[in-house]
Image 1 (tube, rainbow, N blue to C red):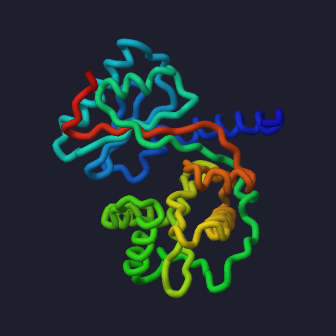
Image 2 (cartoon, one colour):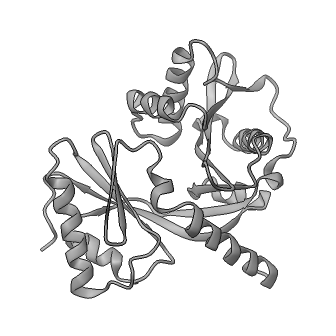
Length: 274
């Protein structure tokens, strides 16, 4: 990475740590509390752990904090699992091993991409017959949301909880936009824009194209449309936790990789590793 880009990446990372962690990650939570450096939240049956840093905790003290956090969520019979979201630049470097030792399971690592929204807000040529449309701002958005969820399940190959999604959308109605690309009456690509109140950021999430339509610029076009909408809302920066599929598209558009993120999941009934 060239020196000027490296300096920009450090500036963006600082803004990310300052503006997008702790309470900011708890938007829509049904309950929030603090424990030392941690902010803990509940989202229905799922828990979430956020922090800006771990206050220098290492060794046994960090193990104790992890154990106390497990106990906190385990005491709540309504919580079936919780996520401890790690970042690649966080200390200490052995946090992942300590989470695994207490029964967490690591999900896929993603790259945190950040940059100016204006860099993505460009005109992108679409294949013939493909149209972009926002679907959450209609009087009856239910049928379109169901079609979008079905397309997202095809794009990512995993189930997607429609009920949880609709409930989350209702809680953040003024902050979330759901966009789709359609062809021949079918949803072929989906993506959300989520404005983060009190910050300079909006997130671009859930972007996925069904397999037979990939490689034709549709995800890039949907991202550009969300960037234009973000600018219209006064947003300066966009951020995304990117898969290996979306990272190169966002990087070519001018976003920078600033760190990585790996979710560690504790589920009720999991036993620590021996």
